[in-house]
Image 1 (cartoon, one colour):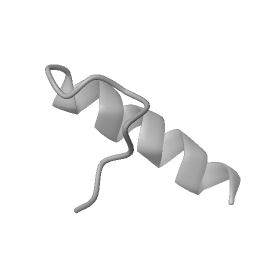
Image 2 (cartoon, helix red, strand yellow; image 1 turned 180 degrees about the vertical axis):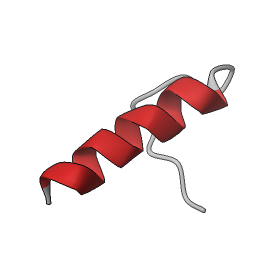
Image 3 (cartoon, rainbow, N blue to C red; image 1 turned 135 degrees about the horizontal axis):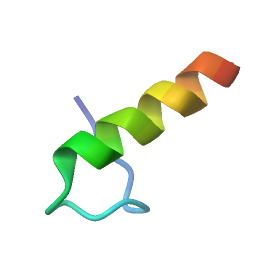
Image 4 (cartoon, helix red, strand yellow; image 1 turned 30 degrees about the vertical axis):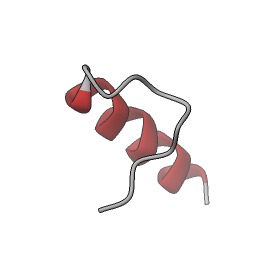
Length: 26
């Protein structure tokens, strides 16, 4: 899985939730 440089890497859970939200909007 590719993680965007936006969210911090030290918070994978937060990033995953953020990605899920972005994908949900799509």
